[in-house]
Image (cartoon, rainbow, N blue to C red):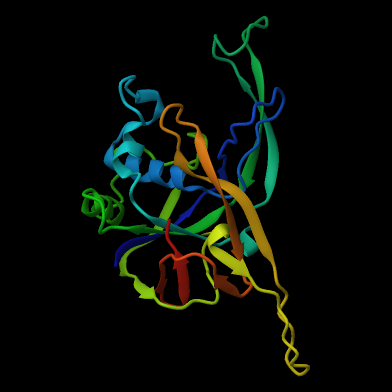
Length: 246
């Protein structure tokens, strides 16, 4: 299967959780599929939430690209990205009813996030356009990491061929927890150094709900533990990496 592979990174990122909080806005711990589709849509000039027609069920970028499958490989160690709380002023006139119209906004930002992204090109009519745009570094809109305060750097762009795997015991990308059993490390070899097993887990957005455009989330995992398939799904490989596309 043909896919576009690229490195996505930035100094900061903010993927806002929809939870309402008067004092602090929280971020998801990693990039999610809707945000990746937004970057692909920026490449081709598709409209976002602010340009959404009232008659349309979804923003333009999502309507046209939602069927594309992607894989997300966290490049920060163990998928852990440091977070820092930032406060800044929003001084637009309608920001606050207080005197002077100045609202202090406090957000939780990811610091120096990095991912390797794989985008399936075969199943979408815009696949070739996306590939050419990324290879030429030609974007209609500036790509950003969740919000336009956080510019995205895109590097190491190439088209690759993914190979379907019949068996897999480890994955090197985020995957749906419901599809795999995480196995315990029960090695009894006393002469072999035991590998330290780690796991990152978080509910991340994977779809938009049609009537409200709210996020539909799934439990997603990134781990070095051995896995066993619970539900039938396809796994692909590139080089030494086994990938779950969703």
